[in-house]
Image (cartoon, rainbow, N blue to C red; front, top):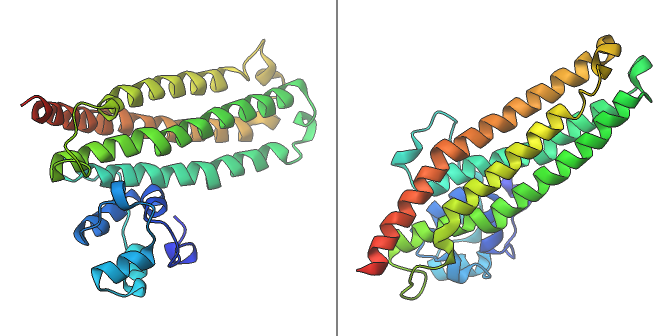
Length: 247
């Protein structure tokens, strides 16, 4: 994760901080800020209202740790798990995908320019496009919906008395998105296996194929956490919030 001090400024919107580091909600809630109402306000405004310096806010944000994969998520607010998943998104987009793309672009002896090599490049481009869209949907739609629901459950609504709204479908939309991602990943892995092409260039393709499998394994692990940890937490929040709404 890039050091936050290199991208946060007094004019940075609260909503942008939350999207990049959802764990920042711990700080904002503690300062009496409701990012779901006041997200368009900036950090300088927050400091003035809270009676602390902007530099103090910067420092607290910069020092926020990222929870590890073995964290007992169920005992924490859901924004810590979403923060962990968002950090992994950054790794996929800014580290893993560019590294694999660079590997494909490097000369690879007899493999470069072959039909298999073109298949690898084309299939990777398709998959990376799907992955990018998937991440964007999660961060712009699914994650905020879950976080809003948690806020409504813990704090009694988002600035008003709310009924069962579209956000309550966040868990179902999340799992549907995961199904789409799993299908895209499977197609990517299968796309470079037509008619024994890999066996024909086995020596040159080993490095690329191993990198492909390692990246796929990392994405599958990420998906498993979303399915087995985030989805049940989101569904439970919705169930409890629904019970409040019908009382």
